[in-house]
Length: 335
Image (cartoon, rainbow, N blue to C red):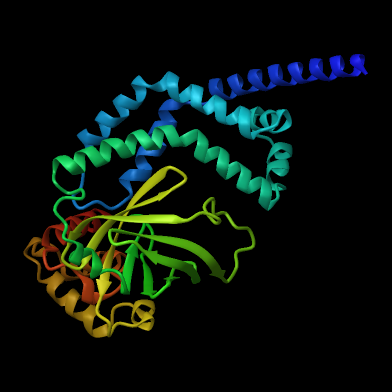
């Protein structure tokens, strides 16, 4: 019996040493600068009351570089906690058909485990980025600054367009007592949440996704999502979504009650498209172009705007500068 315990203890020690070695190997193969860039790009694609200049993001990257050793230690801890020796071996093996085949065979439970690992590895980096962002917003008085409770209450119930990432199609949202429903035009899904309002923030908990995905790649499927409103401007509110100790920054626009999901699904009407095209083609900045070139640039701009504002009714009044930038971007494509 004692001999058996000794052998078992010796095996555990050897296994731990092997895991340590593999975790160190993973860190050697990982470019921390790439991790920092990827983490920063995640936040650069989110929504804030004002855009941050490139200098702000560069400053954050420098601060992350200064804490590189700390982040590596946290990544190593996460690897040792979440992965077995076999899984670490797979992770550090150079890409091959055999390795990819094994990785593709992971079940839903293993996928969830991988998400937990990714979150634990990235959490220290993401939390530090969020701290820098919130400090900058506070300096600009754009973060929880003098918002009356009555302003929050306006957004408790109703219909909204919800923006999550710059390059993602915004979703149509209906919020009623105890429930929120999101309709996503890009993947044609309907997500239902249990909804609980708490004056300055609200909690959401996913209860159903239809049609149900074949594989559920949602790391927070069993978690309560906290949406904290931190800035309000007109019918738009900006919020910080928190889950598993990580935050995202997004915004939502409240819609008139007369607007229906069908309006969002169909998008701009022919009359609205024609009206925009007429105004755009007559833009002073396009006078040097031929009629064909101007029409192409304006059609390209209109498509970009339709993605960003799926309902013509929510086009901001002060869009001139944004439209000009879009037109210039489209001009380079068609000249």
